[in-house]
Length: 91
Image (tube, rainbow, N blue to C red; front, side, top):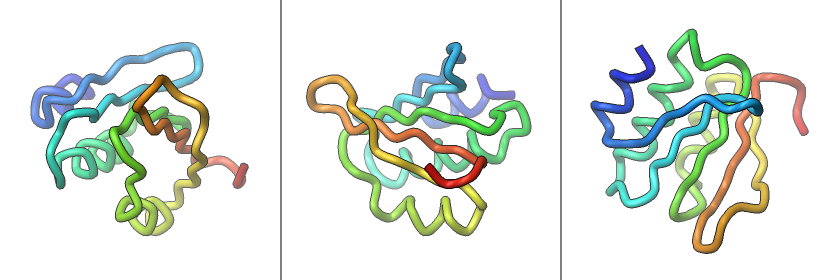
């Protein structure tokens, strides 16, 4: 099912040791938010997702809070905003 989200949003989705990753760089709004929220609604997404984004997604934060997800900015590659999303206790 996660592959269908990837196809719909043209985002890149992969699983790594630290959880699912979604790369929404280069997508025009609202596609990044829709792809991220779609992944979070997928039961296979687990409790930790790493987001690779072009910019800080300030409009995403209220949606995450409403769905019970916490977030924090972490160091990423050059010209990348990287977020770690978690359903666990706040960071």
